[in-house]
Length: 291
DNA sequence: ATGGCTAACAACGTTAGA
Image 1 (tube, chains in turn purple, green):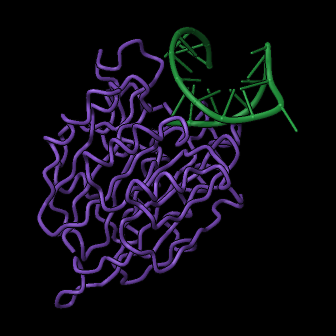
Image 2 (tube, rainbow, N blue to C red):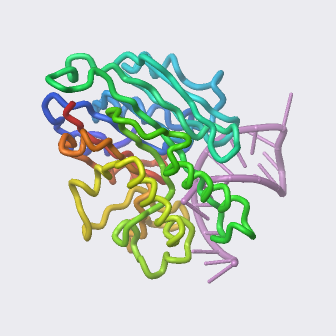
């Protein structure tokens, strides 16, 4: 069906003894189920985190994904939009979901993943607390007074850094997801032209930085590939050819707790996936973390 | 501020994405 996975596989020799986490805004898990299974075969993640599954729980393809090697699952979805899922080869000890910004929507799911022989070394944790987050897009107009969607997004981002939803703790943690903010200059194709565009406005990037700092998260992708390297994970559907001008943004993130900062062995942004015939507008991000 | 595109749905136009 698709030609990209072998290319993906070549780029993806796993780091020895590491836990591989893949995060992807899949933009409908039912529409892209087959390609997800194929992606999992080639990229061999231990844990998959999806956003925008766009399906209620009773029509989530749980059985097919269990059969594909991910029997341990935690997911929530809303009809037609939102929706997050954690799919794991390793057992899940606890599941959790939190409500954000006063709404009971499906934008967060957490799981305590039992990492088995990967963890538990001297002073190491035998499990990790994994949060999968889907921050609201925020609509078109970057004015919280005029645009309720933007106000919702700002409130969500404030909560991400307030410690009220995810409390500060010395826990071994990973947070991944579509945070819908491209925080740094080289996270967008044109810093200047996007300063007033939702996803890269100063109020959003400041709030994301505050969230990052508040819980001492390490931005795993930038830790290994610092500025000024240009890194994007999303390209609009609205350009005839996404490669022309490479007009992307880095909206999808992998954050780790400070104890894991030095243990992120490699990260890959799977750009080739943007060329698939039936592609999401986001591409997967893969991180290998030695526990 | 707009265009252009994609997906879901009591679905052939509307809502949402970002």
